[in-house]
Figure 1 (cartoon, rainbow, N blue to C red):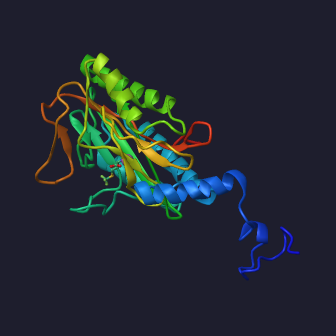
Figure 2 (figure 1 turned 180 degrees about the horizontal axis):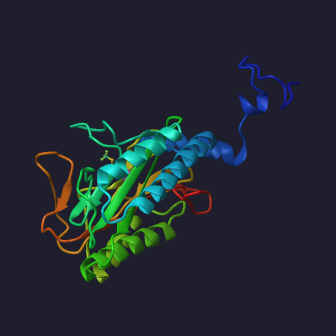
Figure 3 (figure 1 turned 180 degrees about the vertical axis):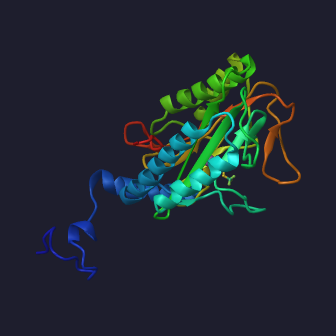
Length: 293
Ligand code: MF3
Ligand code: CO
């Protein structure tokens, strides 16, 4: 009789228990679930090995983001922040996911979105000034796995409108994370975010969404931050971002026709965004993009 620690019958060289050992109980259920989610929603439920790789990538993204945020002070240009991010990726043996991404290829390694820029702001030679608010978005590829997160930085004294969007965006992300658990319908994320934002007289951007992430930069499902009816139940092994963009004025966003990336509020009013990558667990969720340094 073959034992758990014997070499597997398939000649992989691995132990039977690590290879073709028959799966039983919850593992078997999860296998079926993974198959079902792939077929029905095109969503990959990540296995333990993938979760471990994605967790490491997310921790790196969070550490890089934290370091860049610390460097963001009046007088520093967003190009300098980008260059520092490039160096930190290199030192960790990672690649910045944004560089060369999409059409036209995104030209830099991080996004720096200032004041009325909702997302996808491109680093340049403008020095940060007192009164600026800025979202810094870091997405990295480590050993083939993706992690994605962003944070706001505030430069000196800011207007009450800017203060409001920063606070509301942060609270929206927190409230959305707090409800996550298996079985919750995906729409409850956006419903929770918009319900709160509207009590604060802010609007929620609906032209950009959160997304599955991990094996690719952007995977199914899309994660709307506005009120919606997506009835996909969350399941253990799902990994996705929540990245609400909250505006002081109208929700509409206009993409710069020249660079085809920079997305600004239509009315020029302030906007803010925070982003985490989340894993759905058996009992709730885990924030993967927590800095370890
Ligand atoms: N978190 C952002 C997103 O998921 C990162 C954008 S990088 C860019 O869209 F290259 F697409 F700009
Ligand atoms: Co993202």
